[in-house]
Length: 115
Image (tube, rainbow, N blue to C red; front, side):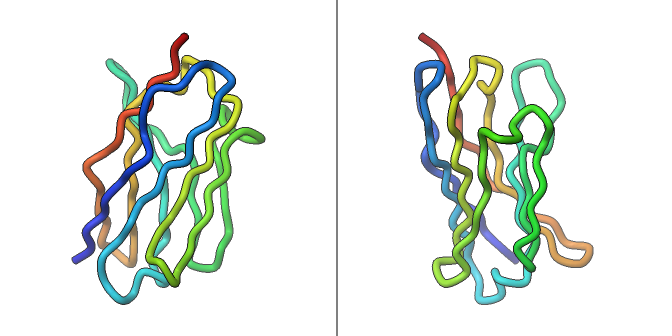
């Protein structure tokens, strides 16, 4: 069982930056593949970025070049650095952990991009 707690969301102006953090419980964090997803009102949840246990990353086309996912296994934490934010990035952002057939979700953190 893994518990995930996201933080770092908030209100930011277009063009601004935010860094989301996701702290995980447990002693085998380093084996989990981690991901950030988002869900905007009226839309399906979508993958934003992911990082495997081997540090391989991939991103949605809509955020490539603007967002960076990283992990610190010593701190059991995964990050999402978001730069050049746009109003269409507004959503609830969720952290995900996956290992074998098990998957876990955090409670989500709201990101609002608005002037």
